[in-house]
Length: 116
Image 1: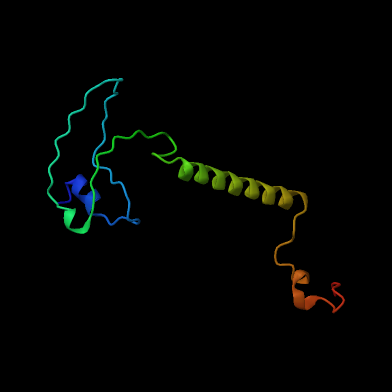
Image 2: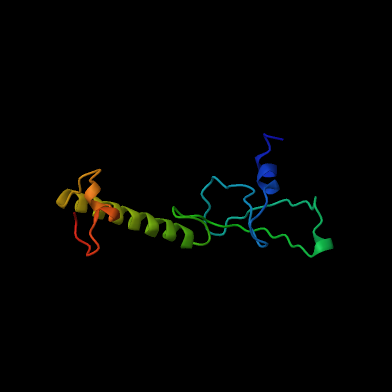
């Protein structure tokens, strides 16, 4: 069973009730009006619980599949993290704080908020 990749993908539990699972990948470049022949067998009946099966041919881009939101979200959060990291590095270079300085601890201050 470990060699049957399509079965392994289909046996994984889906997170949502409506899902897509990759069965195969077309490695050839397709031109407009190319004919694709698909042979389908109904090995697992879904009529008893109202399930549906559909064949979807889709394209993918460098940031993901049918929905670009996840790719754009990853790029946005990654860019934000990079910006914050660079900001912290610049702040540390401009105004460094000595490591292990006990004068910054809250219990080393007077009630007025001044350092001892």
